[in-house]
Structures are given as structure tokens and as C-alpha cells.
Length: 389
Image (spheres, rainbow, N blue to C red):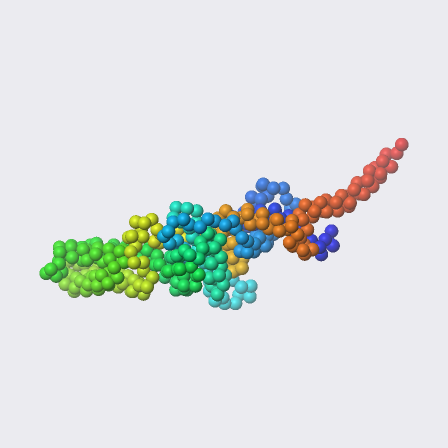
């Protein structure tokens, strides 16, 4: 049988290879092999390495496949394209040389109307000049044409901000409200015990709290000049409270001032990507945070590659696994498999290893029959001769 290796490079049928890939993206490879062994009879030669190799081979197909076209959005307001980054542990080199980083960043994007099924794109490859082109293809396959306005929601990653400018669509970059709200919540938690007290003659009985509420409202409604002025005034009043406090809350006022300074610096640094009016967008039912992308990262990356798995990955191995998981999440895996199968049947692959699976299996059965049949006949003849007439 060894001469077949020169003509048939693949010892798995196409259906089995794609089944290996789909199972390999759910549990770890060894567990997927146990599940496959329970469901299907095997020759005994399959192992977790062959399962992994089939996943790697199949993982090249979804990136170049053409998924079914989706209808473009019908509503007039801009679409939201959420972008975030997940991380997995990087595999150590065989020679134990020092690696540049202990983790691999996986860029994940999700797009679609609120309340509908999101379409996902992900890549573990370095962020090169091909990234905007891949994003354009992703938006086109998702039904988003050039006339639309695309808003990229991110969380202050600078290289992701440039992505909005490189898209052919009319795009803008919007700061994720969840990160802004977290900064303000930290100030809110610390300033609550300091709420009661008049610090200036014209102030109210809850001067610090009233000013903080106005400051938070100005940020929420996008009134930049007002939140800058009220934030600076709040910082000065906290300094005054720290100097004049007689109730033992001077340390709390100092901590609040530090948190407020951190929030103000964050807002000033990202002032060009702040949405003008978060409240209006929220009332219109539009997304204002990347929570839907973070949950997507948890489904696509976390559950298989890092959540309690203690795994390490190479960049190429992580990328091909991510491509298959994304195709499964987008419900396009079966379509990509059918496209690949039709290509083989149509003769698009002309190499010696592209024999049709049915032909390949039939040829193996013929070879087995040709070897087994003479032996059975010889054993029957010898047994008949030993018995005699």
C-alpha cells in the first residue's frame, strides 16, 4: 500500500476531515477524539495529532470562502462595528529562547443591527496593511455597502482607531461608554461619603455630590465645555475638603481626587473619539459600548483557548482554529464545507492528492480484497487437502 502515498496525500475523506475540524474547535483535541470514537467506528489509527492536523488544513478555507450574501440594513441610521482584542498564552519555543511576548492578541470584530444575529470576524495574525482589506471584505460579506456610515466602537486602542479612517465607508471612531462609565463609577463610589457638606457660601448642602451629578450628566450628553469646567471645579472643591476636613474623611477626599484626576485625564486623552450625545444614541436604540464584542470574545476565544484550559498556542495554530470557530458561530461552516466539496467534485483541484473520496475508498477496498482473497482461497484448499476424501 505504500506506493499510494505518492499519488494520494490525504488518507481521510473530505467529510471526516471537516467533521474533525468542527469537533476540534469545541473541546480540546484529546476530548474531541474521545467523543468521535464513541460516535464513529475508527480504524484505530486516528489520534489527537491527526485531529489537530485536519483542523489546521480546514482552517485555511473559511478565510478565502465566499459566504452567502446577507441583505444590507434597511434602517437609515449608521451601523455599529464593534472591535476588541482577546489574548491567549503564547507557546514557548523549542530551543527555550526568549520570546518577544507571552501572549498572542486576537482581534475580534462583530457587526449587525441591535437584537439580530451578529456576524463575527477574527484574526490572530499581526496587524499589517492587509487588515483594512480584510475588514472591508468582512463588511461587504455582511451586507454593508460603501454608501453606509460605519461607526467603529473600541476601547482606546490606538491602532484600532486608525481602522475607521482606512475603511472605504464613511467611518468614525467612537469611545466605548462602558470604560467611561467604569471610571465615573469609581469616583461615584468614593464621593458618596463626602456628599453632605457646604464648602462655599453659594454652594448647596450637598455641594460635592450635586457638582459630580452635573459633571456626569455633561459627559453623558456630550457637552464637552461644561464637563471640562465642572470637572476642574470638582477637583478644586475636593482639594478644599481635604484641607479643611475635621470629620476624619480627609484621606477619602484625597482618594476621590486621585480617581477624578484619572477620569479627567482619560476623557481629555480620548476627547476626539467621544460621542457627542450618548443619551440620544441610547434612546434611539443604538449601541454605545463593546459589550456585545466582549461576549463574542468569550464565546470564540475564551471558552476554547484560555478559560481554564492552561493552553499555549502558536500564532498560526491559533489563527486557523479561530477561523473555524468563527465559521461555526456565523452558521457558515456547512456552506464553506459544501463549497469545498463541490470544488473537488468539479475537478478544480488537479493535483494527484485530489482523488474523490468515494473513488479513494473503493480503491482501498479493492486493494484489500486483492490481498485477502488469495490467502482465504489457499487456506481453504489446504484445509480440504488435510481432511482428505
